Image (tube, rainbow, N blue to C red; front, side, top):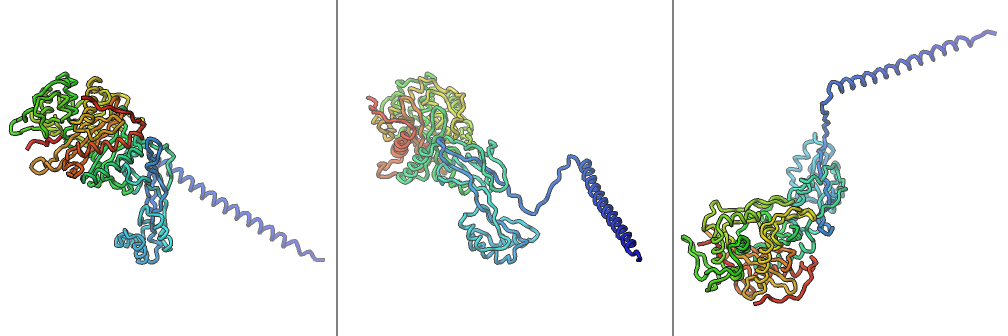
Length: 560
């Protein structure tokens, strides 16, 4: 037999060896390639150490901010973040641009068709915002359109479940959820917010405000009622703890809607902190306090107020002249302009200016919610300035600053700094008057409400021992002061045996009505408004009513 199998076996052996060699060669080449790439990366890293590498993406980076909740002093919710859809488009994927523009503008009427068409025309862009933070029901309508290249991204949006309540204090955020005013701006400035991409909710503890929702609601409702009752153009009010400076409520009508995201609506200025005003006769509290504290006068010191005071080309007179010499007590009770002017002149201009400076009324203040408007003070401080400032003209201050000064007069004589945060009041306090002077001011304020001759008698609330002072300031107009356009104010404190709270009310351009007996002075409108506010908020603040016995027996505007 012939042997024929030997040669094929040899051939198979040669093919296997060849394949193995090829595999080894390929593997080696790939390995060398990887080594070359790795070496090049190491070389680039060594050469370009310290150089920041940047990555360009076709999608717009949406910066948003995660914010902690804002709650009232009792933990009730004022503001929080919620997830909300935002609409965007990829122009490179859109099939029919005109169809997209037509359908979206029908569902979202606020869209600008021309701008949207222009944005979608650039197919080199892969990301274009159409509308940020749209309502869920509208988002569903857009989704139902089924438009290719149009989609949603979930972002954070600030929600205010109480709508406009405390709108000025809360402030607002912009479309990126960044604070632009009020306490929302404070959160950003204090480092309490975090930059995020998408809808990452904050894990920070809620920020507790000094505001009490119940007190805020009561104050706002009573101010709204007062604007209707007295046909006023606007109204403001503040409730403050006289010991800590914590603001329990602050309202300036009309109030803004924090959901609008606007911080620049001039028709909704926060008059409590953002405006300065000549406040009229409530300044007599300061005039009398300074005189008593300096020992220039006592409550029984007599001033002859029978005749108007003539100073150069000006004549100062009283709205309701007493027709007899009057004590400091009577001057306060009857709100005598002539008497206040005489008291101020006896003290002197230097002491008057120093006292107002000590109370913080001549320098700009600031709270967590932002700066307080700069006071307007006279360039010269001469005799006529002393006279007009004595009864509340010639110096214009923000209401919140005056409320803080009033708190110092009634709390025993220590100046407190206003705050919108609970438990953040400054421990250090500045004594501005003696405790005895404070006691005498409290006596006068209580008498002004209980005495039938007092200008504040309509502020009385049975059981709550209210005291206060009226002020009616003529508003400056073209060519001088307008006698029919006034700001009527009332500063109240309660309970007067040991005041815990100050309430300040201001009505802008109130009108004469049958209820006010055709009067526009503060005793007929601002004082009763303050009384109604106290009647509502005192129980909320834990002040219990007790039986009370009535106490025994052209110049700048001069109304009482």
